Image: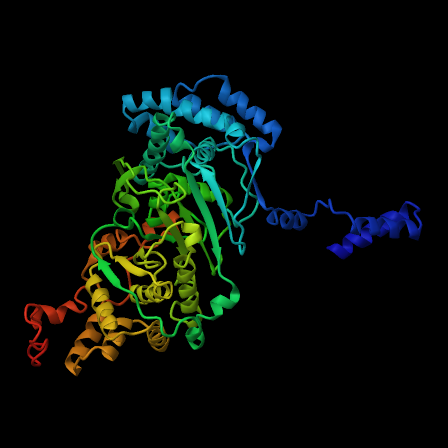
Amino acid sequence: KKKLLLLLNVWVALDRGRSRMDIRNYFDKRKGDTTSTNHRHKRRKVQKSVVFSLPNRNERDWQRVITILGSRPIMDSQMLDSILRDLPPTKRRMNNRGLLKFINFVMSEDERTRFFTKTLPFMQKLVLDLPKIFDDEKVLPLLRAYSQSSIDLSRQQCACLLAASFFCVHRKIWSPKYQNPNFTYLFHRSTDSQVGKFRCILHYFSRLSAEEDDEKAQTRIITFHRRVLSRSQCERFEPKNISNIGSDCPLTAFRVLSKGTIEDEGCGMLQADFANEYIGGGVLNTGCVQEEIRFMINPECLVSLLFCEAMRPRESVIIIGAERFSNYIGYGRTFRWNGDHRDQTPFDKKGRFATAIVAIDAIQCDVTPQFKRKSMVREMAKAFCGFSVDTDVLSQDYDSIATGNWGCGVFGGDVELKAMLQWCAASLCQRKIEYFAFDFKRSNNIQLVADVLLQKKLTVKDLWADIAHHADVGLFAYLMGKHAPLDANQLTLISYSMNYSDEDEGDDSIAEDSASGNDASNSESEESAQPDNSGNSETGFNKPQEVGIDDTNPDVDPVQSKEDC
């Protein structure tokens, strides 16, 4: 096509009687023209952008926003719908059916009155005060891929940006590597889980409007930090190179908690976010699993969608200081808002809430085989990237990591493999693991294996070598067979139990696996979440305990005969 276009231009020039020198000058000028309207050129130029444009950067659009939002108060849902359709950046044919149904049929009369008389005017004021809140700045820096950097925003600035997202006046960065920060798609549906999201968002703004006069709270800082490992650092996680990063590094403490959640019980720890490579996953769409729920109960995390590029394999995103505003019950389609939450987390040296949320994305096992050497190295490097964040960024020491079944939900990860890889990464950072199993039926297996490996005083090098050597399902059975003093009967039983499928657990297995806070990725289809297929059974290592182990007398041999086994 380019050659044909070139010949066509030459033919047109000759037909007009131009000389060869004129034609050469014409093409030389075209070659040096940097304002070409070529589509690929425009796309490359936009991808290299290093700033996010605030709504007031375009003067014409901003004046229209001021005219529409500042002209008169919004009195009812019909008027709100009309304003959402008329606001720039472009006049949209928006489908606000979900939001309108929530306002008209779900909200009580008192809630609706409070929303239109207090909360919504406060949100309008936040948007109109944007130039003042940002000191006339019109851009924000981006957290770009392979570039380690941080952004600090005040609580008021975060609220202002989220109010602009509610009215859908942000201009999305023209690149597939960034999320759409507007609530456009959130307003489409009115399912029960979407209703829970609406309540979380509006409760956040309601709380802020009530605390508007608290100047100290308005200036509190939230930090968004992008951490990047170098390529050479990732290569050191190859099994043959593991000795270069701590061959003598012992495994740290590992404790499994079958009850509780990361956000409730993980105070004072680094808190894992089982993230999508696109930060936030489907939080502004239909997704409603671990990451999306965390971003809804800590709404200031939603600001990261504006300027955070999709994570690459050796990157993580850390959000420090996000306050929790809501309680919840349920998971996925059963998610519901469950009242106000007053965050009692202490403050760090910078005056932020000492809540550090570490977003790390796992591989999709239906796309990339998880037991390949390259995949395991990638997962270990990813976990290490999140768990080894510098103390200078955190402003205080976190000696433990609150995590769980990372990547084991819709991404189909093996629970045994992911638990051991996270343990290796945390041990290299000299941080303990608090593993929240979320009622996972085989959580006792994880604790039993961890206790055995700690008793044998294994190092990270030893465990990583075992993982790389086995590289298949049934990792726990392999580790127990190698390191635990078991006879042939026990090994046979353990191998059977670890490869036993959960066919008889039915829908309860799916519900419990969903409630485990498993991966937040691919969140637009939480209906497709599948039960864990790690190969473990409900019995696991509990079977010998049920028939032959006397916990009250440690001197008794656990298995004394074939009949006991």
